[in-house]
Image (cartoon, rainbow, N blue to C red; front, top):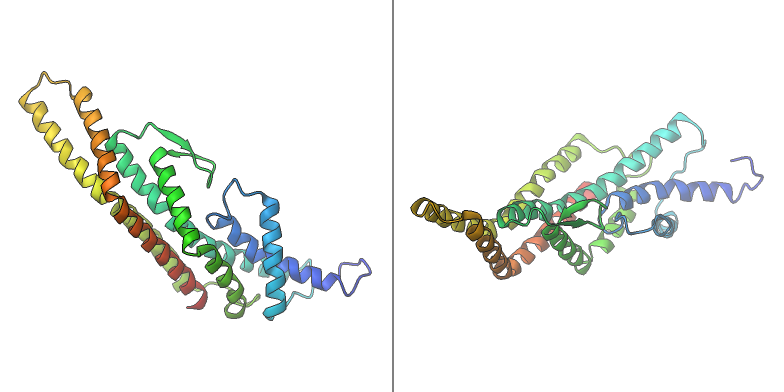
Length: 258
């Protein structure tokens, strides 16, 4: 097929590479697998291992020609499906970041930022903490195994060559982005409401005693109250993050299985 004189090896190798396109695209966009700290070599090895499993268990029609417009079109289809599968889970991981922005700015922690290992970009320190908790919950709920299972099953439901996503599925991905914002605000609601009440009290004090140094009193009070509120509300926030992960996995399963 490639002109190397190995007719028995070339079709199998090209079929494996073709299958790895969807899996590799999903690993690039998905959380945990797509983290900057995960080496590219690890992703390639995992994609190859899962690709061998797919080739042996799912009927995959490999394109007959390597350099043709139809082949490039099918590769684009595979990449689109893989990116969509990983992107839905990545949207769910944006919810805690939205919550950290809302909580951190009201607490006075907006200036404290660290580098997020998932994205390699600066994020608020509180967002880094919630992102780590979200990752641990994702692994505890076997989210990585469910993603691999959905990738393998997607080759039977969305076979190569007929893997275009319908407008309804693309619309579902867009609407799930709105769910990420709603879930982030839901996570920030308990702490945000308490700090809002504190700000109202501090505002009343500043009106009744204009000589009072608002920054010397309000900032430490907001920080201390926010930490106490986080400690009290964290069990409920953990349950909410678990629900977000389950909703993301359900949305990913709906994208594949319908």
